[in-house]
Length: 283
Length: 317
Image (cartoon, rainbow over all chains, first blue to last red; front, side):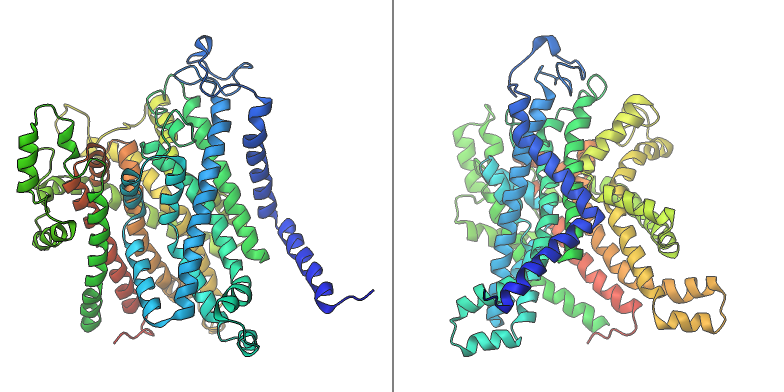
């Protein structure tokens, strides 16, 4: 059986990467957290089958019990069910806004680094402008301008998070552009878009993956802050952020309402930060 | 150096133009238009709205309005608040001292703690203390600041009744500094925690980096006492990159202040922005957004200048 050199190297390197990642203690803890939280939010509502908007008058204002594991909220809705459904929204928004942020950043950075000159100058000044408006002020302003909804919140958060990926991608493209293998690609007559897509991008993604992981955690916090302030996901759709909006009012009578949603944000973001840390070391 | 500062200030003019354009055009697309705040008021007749539209120049094309707004803005005239008709500058000015008090206290606290913790954990690398600091700072970096605020209110306010959790002073009571400071404690700690985790990591990394340098070995080889090596040789060099990060963090604190002021009902600029945005008081919204952005631009310049002052190896033309 013929085995080419590429076949022999590739799987071994890939195994090496996963191996390194799994041996990284922080990354393992982070992965475990993320798998647990995600699985709970996806499959949890099937097992703990309650309606997130159903009102149980008997449970109104009562703390955790067998019937309501995390208690019930100020309207008598089951807190655990709302945490699980809210988690779907929060993680979805985090994921989408990460994709949007990294997407915009990668394109801007690649174009900037590849074309250089006036394009580079203009795009990098746009990065400077976007970085100069304190993010939360810009986010709140954007959230009022755009119609409310899961997709537009994700879009808005992505729109304020493309600057760092753009700078990363630009510096990667600038580093890789003068390499011999790029020159070789030019020599065999590849068109520029193909070189950018097939030769440069695969070699430039490592820092973007790390940044994307950290961005997802940050995006989940951002969504929570915006929804908490009333500018994000709007009730009755639950999200970890808007579940905390009223928590301050009931801080004495129903303290569990203030604890659980915030803890979910905290533990999930911790998971992303730990995994991001592990990826940085492993990649 | 003076030439460098002037050049940086001149270069920031196009940047500021870009920022104001973004903010102005966004604010103009607030739902219901700039006069949305009056639309829901029954006592305002359509004729009055029409009159206001003409008076404020809102019937002109948006780029024309922007230029007119800019001409006034550079002279410090940001228009009048829709809430009470006072000049925007005065309305914001009333809130600035509260924000400065909170941010100043939080910045000082977080810098002092970050240096102490960062240096100690670098000098005792891999000790239990260092390990503990690492774990806590991971937690700190993953903590949503408003949730920390809620937890703190729950513990120190609602359960223990140790400290006040809202406002700048006891309502109705005459102003006293002690009372004001008691109100300042909780929001300050929360806002300081916002940047502390990251800052102490920077300090630690920077000190570790310097300690591994050859000139530190040389200093030790000369027979200098360890505290002289650390204090005079290591720290002075380790702090250079940290100062830049701290200056930039002051800008980052502005977003944190918005959240903290909202949670603790602290009557500062961030809280004013939040309230104005809810009311649709758009001249105030634009004014604050522009002001905080200008602040960030100035702090960026300050960071670069400080770097040049502290590190004689860096020469700016």
